[in-house]
Length: 192
Image (tube, rainbow, N blue to C red; front, side, top):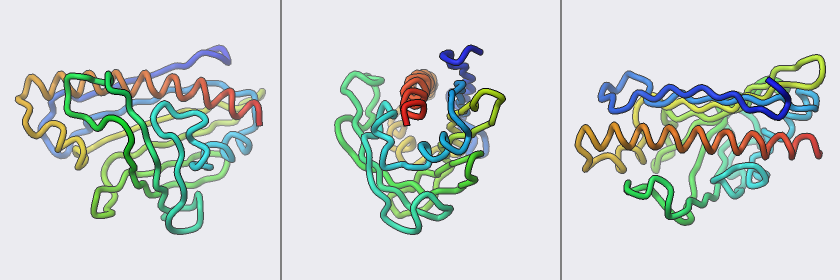
């Protein structure tokens, strides 16, 4: 991998009905010319995420000590009208809440999406950081086990074929977003 390339892996269990299977496991990685500590300082500063995310435009910490396990972040988001246009996904502006589930300076920062009742869901996003001789490698990852409240709502009226199509299209969308996010994130980290 050269320092401007993004390597991605996508595993989408399209149409899987079993609650115990993993619906999505997506990751992408990029080399960054910065220390692991510097990369961590950026990725754990979620209010800045609008500088690199394709969907989250920013937000604020609403509970707990920022960037520590148990802290809660309320994110503001925007999704264009043409994203998986055939499916009933949220478009325009909306907010989400997530809870930090791993905060290991210089190594890993992960958060789980919360449902409308404030419970953690099996939708975990994060960054892994690995020091190298000339900087670090940042890996952006996403895993969804059981369908989230939002996914259940989106797919509630879909038949099996439509669900398979949705999971496939959504996996491709998330993969493209992660790749774009990492390219933006690299530029932000290296400029800090």
